[in-house]
Length: 450
Image 1 (spheres, rainbow, N blue to C red):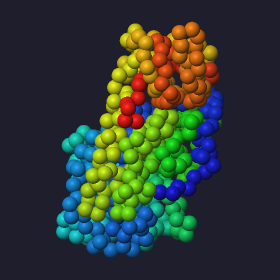
Image 2 (spheres, rainbow, N blue to C red):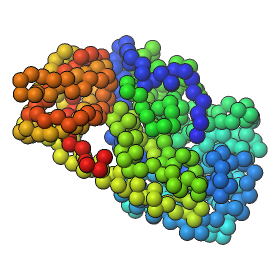
Image 3 (cartoon, helix red, strand yellow):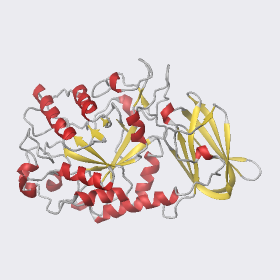
Image 4 (cartoon, helix red, strand yellow):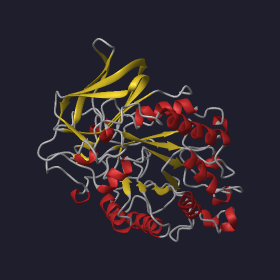
């Protein structure tokens, strides 16, 4: 999963977010995507059987035989974990396809799985639909098996396979274009403009990920951490792997930044694919909750990988971890302690907002004197991301005491601090790009299981 990126991406979460002209705003698809908050990867291919992370491309399809594969088990586990999209590695760097592609023999159709009649992409898409979660596909541009790779003909090959995925499996919510590529790989100029155009035509509701967009960008690491300061805007001039087509982006002005929010991808295990030796190294529910605070709680989206094993099942340890992860989050954020008098800030609707100016403070009454140690703040990002810095204080009975001070908010900022007791809290906008549309404000007491 190692990426190649330009230096501008490494600083994307810490940039000052300065804009000229109109503030960039998310498209309808981007706005809907960010509110999903947690999505899932399912890394599965011949690597699962060779105990490798990157396949060589010369693996025999005969090794691929998940005799107990149950896509419904995957989908139900992800649903219980609160994940809103399941993204399958339809083709990883080894070039092996989990669907019976017409354009290669290196696929499940030549494997023992269901005597060559299997289609794992179809099985998962149907399972996702059955349980009520969205479906996405990962199609690696780098292909170590396909002989045309490194020539212009490969772009045609890739588009043919992309078209199969976009037309045969129902609605696609996200398409993942991984930027990984080995140092000794053949030189290849990908036709990203052509890839993106096809997705827009065939799956207009889908968001597209690559290292720098066009809809979603990489956060810059695979540790599960977004920056303390994280903007959803990025200056795309000279981006890798290719300059974003302005037709696909809601840009502020010709010289301003684009709205391309960050996605934080991380695995529940040390590796991206299942390895038996890592069965004792699965992240705990508490560790996953911490990742949530450091990704979703910093204006990103958490993309967690849960890889199937050689039987084609998710390990019980992994399943239990993501279920408990969601139970802890549900317990922590089940009851907002802010008084119902602030109805527009506790209705869970981004469209209802309180407008604040720079240096303006807002005092929020609680439901009496309450103990709390978590705060959630959300902007109405449909109007753009505006807060550059803010201060939260609590009333100790005599004076206002500093509770937390931070930078960006965006879709969501989560604050953790030692338990305090108070009847009210105060939010002050210290700096912003423009008037702030404050959509939600939550005060909570964390689950004892955290």
